[in-house]
Image 1 (tube, helix red, strand yellow):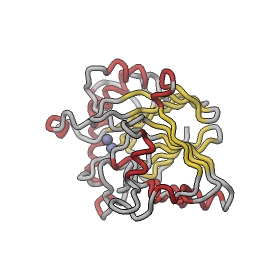
Image 2 (image 1 turned 60 degrees about the horizontal axis):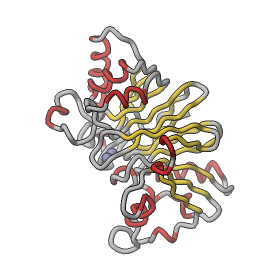
Image 3 (image 1 turned 30 degrees about the horizontal axis):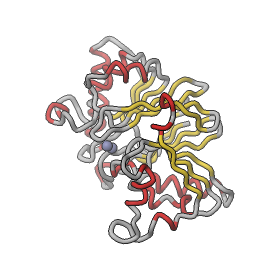
Image 4 (image 1 turned 90 degrees about the horizontal axis):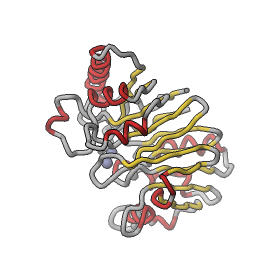
Length: 279
Ligand SMILES: [Zn+2]
Ligand SMILES: [Zn+2]
């Protein structure tokens, strides 16, 4: 099961024009083989934390937070993630080693206790362990019994995509990736034959022309990529903060028309906060 808690890129965008798809930044929950896996700690993780506390009803929570990269929209919710403040809970954070003080250093710096946030990271009572994917051979590792693979994306400062092997096929999370890059064969191989691809499709085919180098995908190129990789289901993700619900509807139509134009069929949907995907 995959549940979306934050589907927006860049900055939270609450308001009447985003009520249908949601305004929180990146946070996706996966439940695979009994493991609680969270991708990114954008503002959506606050509501996820509340939900986990209700579900656990006082019992210790164990979970893994996979971090794609430490741009603000992917870590800004962590200071508001209630389970991290509770002693007895165990959180494993896995991500890239952003120099010089590692992943933990970035999490600590956004909670410096004074300038950026009033409460220091050290106040968090849960056992929080940080692990770098760079230490793991071939970017392959396990979360419990779940096989996970990471893959660098095309994004300023670097970012990781993650793939999960499930009983129902491969699930790939590919956000903060600019399509049309020179090492696309590597990305194609990574997503090849996926049961589900959740992919950055921040821009439409016109917008991308003036946003090259910003590190995000366009709807037409993402559909093309997914078709070539024979993906079964595509989910458009990392919505632009300027895009209203109606704009996202029109981008889904653009995606479907690209597919029709290629004479192909594939299930395509737009990631919506609160929505679940059952494989
Ligand atoms: Zn982002
Ligand atoms: Zn980013």
